[in-house]
Image 1 (cartoon, helix red, strand yellow):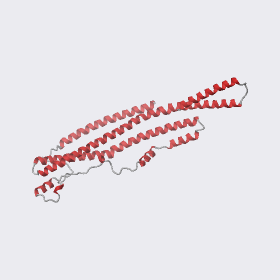
Image 2 (spheres, one colour):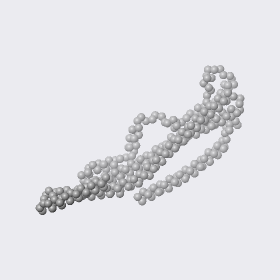
Image 3 (cartoon, one colour):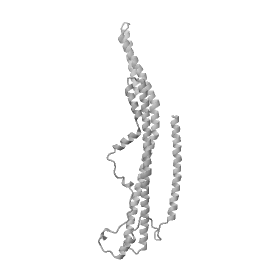
Amino acid sequence: MYEQHAAELQLLVTNFRKKNTDLRKDRPSFPSQLFYTWETFLQEVETDSKSISDVASVLGRQISRPLLDRSFYRKVQSRKVFSQRDSLELILQKSEDKLSKCREDYKRSFLAQLSSPNSSASLSSYLDAHNAYVTQLHATNGMVDQYNQYVLPQLLQELEDVYSDLCMSLSDAVLQGSDVIYNKSSDQSKRYNALGSQCRQLTPGSDLVAFARSLTPLPTTPHPSQRTRSYCPPQAPADTEGMLLEPGVTEAIAQLALKNELIVDRLASLDVRAGYDTIRAELMDLESQMKQIQDSVETFKRLQQRFIILA
């Protein structure tokens, strides 16, 4: 825009100077204050054109290109953060679906045991269903707690860092531009000085506070996939309420009232040692992946710093 404006001003000056030359040919040569004033005005406009061209050069060289280069990787980073959040929420939803399935299996096994209280096979199936449900319940709650307490705050902090960096970059760019225009144009000094003062007073934190306050009404409860679940064992069928049950059935119901803990029993196919070894192997694999990711992040940071220094 500045370059186009400068070119148009220069073209305008050239056209009027050509007309001045033609007028000089048609009139006698004499000192004319009008022509002198007009020529002085054209000189001032030409000076303005050169000044605007200088401003355009400075804005493009010192502000526009560095700002685009600096904001590019931040834009990529913000997209990765949102993509990671979507992936984590999908994992939480899958865990919630798996918990619902385990709950249904637990309930079916409970009803089967009620109908066949003396069957070892149904009792074994019931204990296995209980263990599967408790395991998945603890896993789901652990994932939800980890997400709410650690992962989500880290994602929000990373977004805040991205916004703060872009905010300060844009503020510095506008400040440099306003200083250039202020130095080149005395007529615009007050307005651009005020803009520069406004840029110096800008703080990213104030923007974030204002943004948070604008989200009205705020949600009072978390998303269903992010709430901690309570242990909910299956109950006796509703149609048995108020009925006189046989002592055997009542005793079976009392025996099937299990707590929120794993059952280690010969009828339950729960292998604690194998589960521990599996979890330990998964932990070692995750630690290895985390180390690789951390090394990649450090390498990426060094490349970014080198690029910024070279730019």
